[in-house]
Amino acid sequence: MKTNRNTFLTAFILVLFLALSAHPVKAQQERMNVDSLFQQARQLAFQKQLAKAQKLCTEILDQKPDYFDARVLLANTYAWQHNYDRAHLELQKIFESKPRHYDALLASSDYYFWAGNLDKALETAKQGLSYYPNDENFLFKISRILLKMGKSSEAQRRLLQLLNINPGHAGAKALLAQIKKIRIFNRISLGHSFEYFAEPYQYRWHMFNLDYQRKTPIGNVIASVRMADVVYDGETLFETGKAFQFTIDAYPRISKNNYAYLSYGFSNQVPFPKQRAGFELYQKLPLAFEASAGFRFLQFQNTDNTYSNTWIYTGHVGKYIKNYWLSFRPYISPQSSGFSQAYYFIIRRYFHTADNYLGLQAGTGNSPDAPTDYLNPLNIYKLKTQSIQLDFQHLLGKQWLIKILMGYKKAEYHPQTLRNVIYTSVQLACYF
Image 1 (cartoon, rainbow, N blue to C red):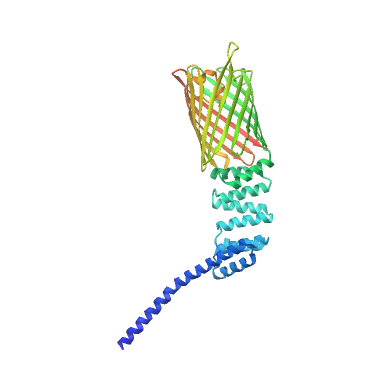
Image 2: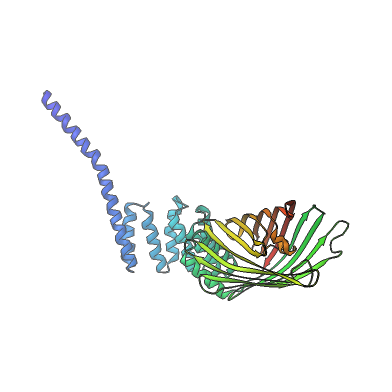
């Protein structure tokens, strides 16, 4: 009797063990089965055998309704047949339980785009970007939709944001090239710069600028007029000493990976240089690097009506690292007593688009590209200066751009004699 009882107990335990162990094995087999069916369905879909692919996807979803990869594939097959309503119906079943499903959001934006509902396509893509910030796929889709809507300036800014993240994105490069072919951009800007120091006398320098930029098929061209007014003690703004300068700058594209900078300016009034010119060749390099080399030329009129010329050689090395841009630029000028040297390091942090950034610059020496420097007498390039500046640029709405700059210098005005200099600049631009 005892033996029978033990035999019965052993058999019961064995049956219970087999029943419990069979469940995970069965679940694993079912998972392997639907995975295998899904791979078959994908292959059939890519072979354009859409009806067979739909049948397999339906079989999978009958077994596992939450197999979302199969439901996205099923929606794709309906969309490829232009049955967008049925495609969206399948995706809605995913969104009911997973509203942030990545592939479903991408697919939904595509279907609206193909169906011609651009507003809904843009809304869906932006929703996806809010869930997955800086995602390359959503950024590219937004750019493509904006371009289709005729909003090429917005599309360009999104593409530049994408290229800041991934400079090698082939689709973004192609779309950006397409934008440049179909649209010419114009920009007009108005600005005011101010510099102040109190040693050895009080000096307030104002400069107003009006610029017109035109984006042409071969690159940007900028025409500028500047008016400078130095205000001394006891004098008011615009009272005496106003001077004007006229410049034109161009950035012609030479090939896919390089472009140039050309500049010429003239003035017949001190303190502007009589003439200024510049040339620089820029080359894009692998790994998001860029390098350049060129020169600046300044000609000043002396008090005896003779002229003094100076040549300044420059270049830069820059690199994008995700949302950051870093650049190092030297200026080397041959002088009778040796070489005058200046070095500048710049770092910028971009936000959302290439128009929005916060930048920091630190340098030693004087730059011929900064109006507050080249407006001074020629011997400034022989003097020592340390400077630091913060600049901020932000796009207001769709067409207004504001840029604010604040800086501080510790500058020589005689050998071994330093003074504190504060300078600011505000620029407001409008795209049209």
